[in-house]
Image (cartoon, rainbow, N blue to C red; front, side):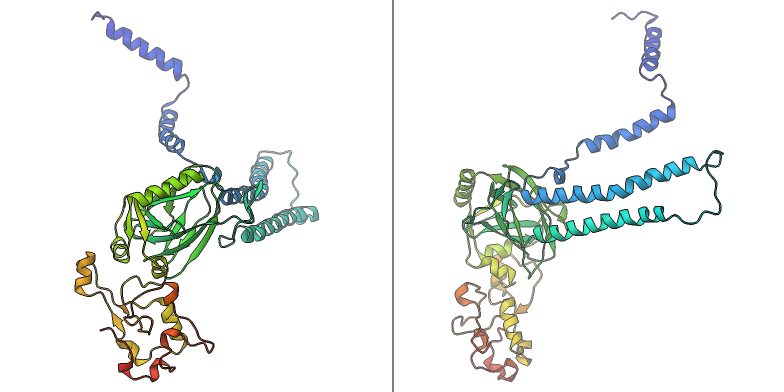
Length: 411
């Protein structure tokens, strides 16, 4: 390109021509308003309305409930908004043709319309809510795979035990004998039965494409029944703020066919190691953005120990504690029945710098002379016909009436 003297003039005229061609009526304030709205449109373009296009039948039914409820409410909202503008325009001060009746105070037809329409909508919403509340109860086993297929009578659900930790998710598969961190998988078109608890604070388990949100609470178990109908990889999150690492408490849920799920289980068994109680206590320590991990096997009774808050050795389980409380409690000797992890155990677990936590020590029984936290079915406390806990059946007296030296104090 030559550098002729009239080049700047030609560029200037070209710029003016382009501006007039593409912005013929654009005023400065309109241009500024458009530029301000551009970032909003850019943000909206990245939205993924997963709640309106789920891949699981339970989530689809919940989506339909949202749409039906919204449409029923819009039957009132839209006419009210429209009539507000119509009345304001028709009865404006400059409209001399509008009827003026200062003595008007009542219309039976208008009153019937104003009250009957909302009442009918409320009745419809109430009926839909009542039916859906029972039909979509997360504790209720599924009776169908999708809208066109019933669940086979002999179908066995996939059981997944979920533990919300700081700040990661632990998934235990008792049938397959494996465990994973921050990765969940299930076969397509097979019912999933989630058993959900937490290790510390309350969280909320939520896979938007699969089903609704269910809370995870320490010392308690919630349940969720769901099914995934399309293969794919979906996002799972914690939907309840739980502290510093909350934003990184995410995982991936993989919907697979049966053959692919079997390969995934085989890979977990090949890649991982045993999730022992000692390793769980290390994993339980707060950490964020934890990478995916696989465990080839799981210590017996680990989930029950987490649920009953007795993973630590020599810690009394909540179920044992409740059985003792039902018999009148430990009384004064119970004040001494406090234990903690000794220094050597803390060093072995890498917990030297973690806060020292005291807990109620386990009770000695003939089947469990060391009072260790073992929640396998063979060692769980049972009740005799008189209602006495096997953990406290020797002698058959409330602990408050026993001699202090008859109680294992673990100090």
